[in-house]
Amino acid sequence: MDEDSGERELEHLPPDYDGDSGVAGGRKMHGEDVRVLEWVEGLPSGDDLVPLSQPLVSPELASAFSIPPPDLKTMLDIHRATQHTASNLRRHQNLSKSSSIVSHLKPLAAADPKDSCSSQKSTRCPGNDAGSSAVETMAEIDGDSTSLPAENSAEDNSGRMLKRPRLVWTPQLHKRFIDVVDHLGIKNAVPKTIMQLMNVDGLTRENVASHLQKYRLYLKRLQGLSNEVPSPSDHLFASTPVPPQSLHEQQVMPYAVPTLIPMQVYSIPHHHAHGVVPVSNPQGGQLYNGFDSFQTYAPPIDWSGGSKFTSIVSNPYVSPNDTIRNGERQKQ
DNA sequence: GACTTAATAT
DNA sequence: TATATTAAGT
Image (cartoon, rainbow, N blue to C red; front, side, top):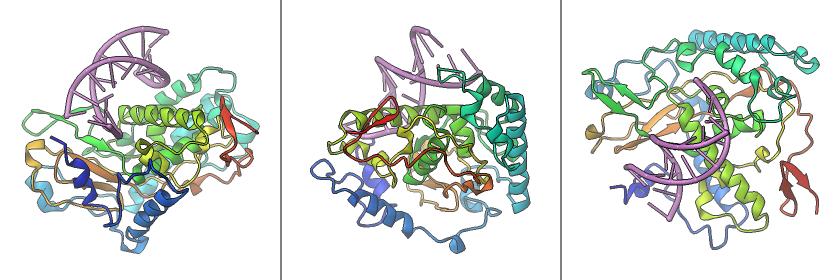
């Protein structure tokens, strides 16, 4: 059924992009990274991007699939949503114990997850629970009635239950994931928080949990064999342009509220899938690959909103000769 | 209800 | 086969 799905995905990649190239044999230090970067560079510049206020799927296609018209986002909407997020996160911050660090933050900066959990040795953090009640879902924040619910199914307009299409973790989406995980620190990076900060409309906690699981396994492998060539299966993760800071447990940096550039996931009935011309909107949104899944394009998160703090953590770069144990770098 | 881990499905 | 999704246990 999906025997050639890889080939299909490649249709949307530059001609020289070989997603399944034999990295196993000899992954030259950055060959893969360079290619991904080239691909990313190939995307339209900011000037070429379609404004957020325009629909992500053409009206014709939307109507063909009975997709209700999305709420058009204006810059005012985005600003309002950002303010909303910020104020909710501030409320969250006020609920948990405030710290001297956080008290210096500019209004847009959010709670320091480490601080609010500092006495917890497990990754479960009461602060997070308090936050989850204070922070609303992205759909609510966006005021977006066309967003899919954060469930794995939705009803179409005739009341049938539709299966949410399988999410494809594109390099862009993964980059956004990594950005968030790195900002949270691997210890504080739990699915719900990641999902909220990623701010991808339609992305579910389950999507994130699954990807996080995979990412943790990748990090574990990375620790296990520090000098080995990365597994070919780590293609996506290894394509992350920077050494994952996630290897370090805590990023003692309060995370910023990312600029809200929501993306929407459209659920298109599978039987409609064949032969559809891909729709692309790199500004954020979905690239429908014409079959049974979507590729999600996400512009990088703009952390500038509140990240006025420089990290207290020293250079997280991990040299190939170092090993990581329990999140601590061990010099050799 | 959220999280992690393991198993299963595609 | 890779990886997204679901299930089970905490």
